[in-house]
Length: 265
Image (cartoon, rainbow, N blue to C red; front, side, top):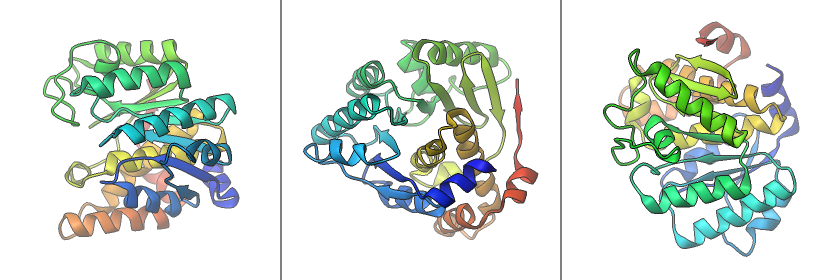
């Protein structure tokens, strides 16, 4: 649990340009793991903010002209200064604007981590997807029948971009080149509260500040799933949301090690 300890001790500044729907919860989960959030998005200041941050996160949910401009400026600054960055491909399966923008960002800013659901992964790879808005579409889910095909898609994206890929779903898949990690934590309630995917990206950004890009991504994805499991019996989705953030803050290393369900394929 050296990654968790590193974040708590160093309190890294995380610059996360995200959507207004989830911005408050994202800031709170960054704080919950010991990092410090800043959500600057004005194009005239974001380069300065990114320059003094330890990690950049960008999220394509609810994009605007100003936010798109700011993310590209920040992404190029992060790449120039060798600051790790993560992009969340929200909605690229349902919007050509987002898809083309994401491709340009990946090509020019070279993010350390690319995160999205399987419909979004297919779209970014130029494969027809069945995206249902920002959610994974029917037929795109990772099943026993489609497993090998989906793994091949994600591996090729990782090898092409040099990024760690986090494909989230009922089974989360984290790929680094030819290495494939399956994470089987989580619960249905996570899909019933808006912004939980954005929160995962916030956790990834926080933990890759340790410079262990693969380890930080695996930890972030698993942590959200484990804390979802611990919170799932709350009385309704409002209480679940509160308990989720509480558990992210209070969970111990021992509980993570006890509950984590992951393996190298």
